[in-house]
Image: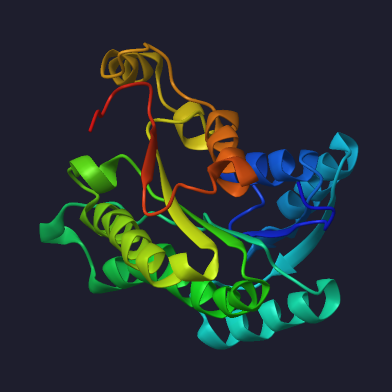
Length: 249
């Protein structure tokens, strides 16, 4: 293990899966940047949880991943202040669900801009620092629906499928520089959204899952921790499915 304190940046790190990843990486001794756009209170709560967890440190990184100039500016600031970025977790994502016949073009664009273009923009800037270090981990949070498709989510499914393709291509480009690029494709995970669903809907979801339960943000964070570690050094261009068996490759 290196004696250098790794620096991680987690986009969409203020809640849910992003928050769990931030806390898990901090427990590994990393310094973790919590990216967010519109909810500083939630981001500050994530920072508090990192500080309580011990091991690592946290800092806030407010910017919109879909804004190229903001990405450039804020990541440069992180590099200036902290000296490096070793791990990038592209987790930021939004949904604008609807059937294609009624989907507005803006709903398509906003989801693709945040969920796919945002990963491209952040990776492009961060990988330059990683190339100089000759070490890096880029972890893209996709989704099971990027592999299976889902009615009413053509924009979200397309963006998540695009992340898988982006990861494979970028993995080939960066492998010789000591940088790995992988995806995690969560299935149904316990979040604020699933908490609001009725008991019948939750039961129907569980019936699609061989393990019979919904996953937790911590399940996804454990996968991210592995892919961010030295233990995953010989793994790149892969998609790790964290879904209780509902989709098997």
